[in-house]
Length: 267
Image (tube, one colour):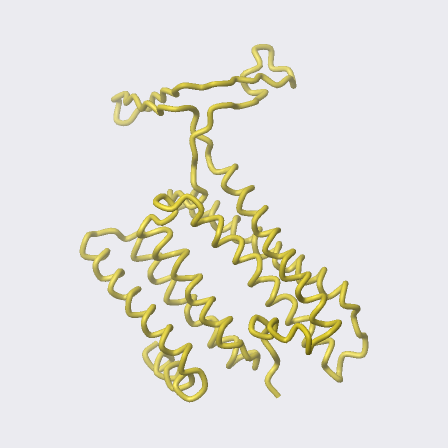
């Protein structure tokens, strides 16, 4: 592992000094966080720190194994995105402190994934071995679909972490209104609407003892609103870059700024 880290440092030192500065700074903060959380016995946070360090190596692996060059700005944004999502969001509770933190990150995720999906097709389009040239509209559509697929897979990951590891990555929220067929007295497929919920009382049993938990302000929604909101803003981010990518193919010189977000194949 240490040899791989040394190779990464050498590569960034020779090719991407700005990315190296961000990588080393964020990696150092992650390691410090991991040590402090480990001393507290917070192994869930330690797991997230290890996951973050692994994700930090993805741009390097893409460059070395797939021979795909990531623009410096894109690479820095990816590092910041990973750090903001896992360390700031999950461990430092920025999701709870800042109302729209999750929304911003998922919108950015949609944008970045669309850029990556776009570049994969654009690389094929410019390859001499690829004889079919796809239209700008089709390339934009593929970029959009790629981004949405990644967004869905991430929601699968969050759901799995919540179910298997008892995390709360699909953030629950309190709602005041529900519509459900589960409360229909005769079991019919008829919606029962409950409005202006003031509080919910939950009775749970452990080791023969009953515990009462009161949720003031409404009813606890278990993740579904968060999941759908994440997919919607991912949709928005994907649409934005897909439109940019479409016009970039039509006129690469005029929309040259898009190259800051588009990986390219190294010769």
